[in-house]
Image (cartoon, rainbow, N blue to C red):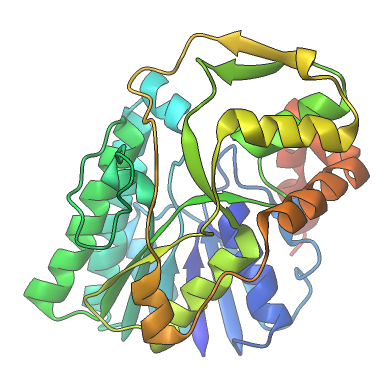
Length: 336
């Protein structure tokens, strides 16, 4: 298969690129990424010389560029990861989220339609369901109740993508994943932020009482789910992807502190996020029945591997925090 990936320099996208090449899922993989603050080509240094792989810096909102790239590379499918994804940033500046997540998805869909691309997989989030009261878990028919500009922009892009299946008969599939974690994650999300702070003995900021519940999914399990949905899932369908391990944020932070040998006194309460969803919970039965996929990495194992990766890659953390990682593109690609 020949794939065009958007946002492949981000956390989940880069994990998919590495795994797709490692597992020989593809004969050709083209990665289109704008390289915003969360796009880090260092995450792909292990594959940058693979003859099956090509990186292209570009903007998904530039429909003409996307069409030209599709016509040049002739991919069999698009896997659309590119998105602004941090809830806190969406509260501070919603405009970028509407631009990238809604307009960018529209641009990609139009490019796919114009070139009669065979397959389009849109990667989304369980946050579109909003906060879910116990004991319920959201299936794919659960009402959308987005709480933040981020989740609202993703809900809008989901509906837009599905409309192209209904109206234009495009083979569009949507996946909605729970909270991802693993190596190479930008240290602004809960787990990498808490790990990096704990390793340095810095305070760990906890929103409110810290009892917000999230389902945790190891990033490689998510990538395998995307591949399963792309190759075995049906067009016009939504598939939830979860790790089936729901935990309060405070419990996750306590596990991190214990693993790195730091006291719980490092946890510091800060004012809660506006509109903070209390509980996310999804069922993955539909994906499992349709494709045979199951999450393989238990949370304790995945967390231990992630903590060890951050222990071993303190220089990566320092470059990300300082912004020095952004020089990698110029250093590595300017002569190519």
